[in-house]
Image (cartoon, rainbow, N blue to C red; front, side):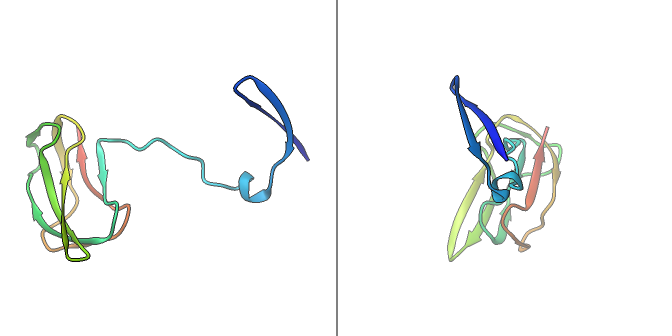
Length: 100
């Protein structure tokens, strides 16, 4: 089935594959929901619920592949909920903290 695409004002006629039609549509991440980018272990939690934080403040220390990664706040706000505990193993894309 032919599909019409308009890209930067130019109209194209094409056939879209089933893989393209069934893809997961991209959604912009919510910067107030902090998720892990790599699997690892939470070795330190630097914030508590209801704490006021500023952009750049340390939230967690995540150890992965013998390296310690400092997870910092991308924005100002208040910690709404912390979803992890010290020494907890976390997987990729796991929600670890919510900011209001």
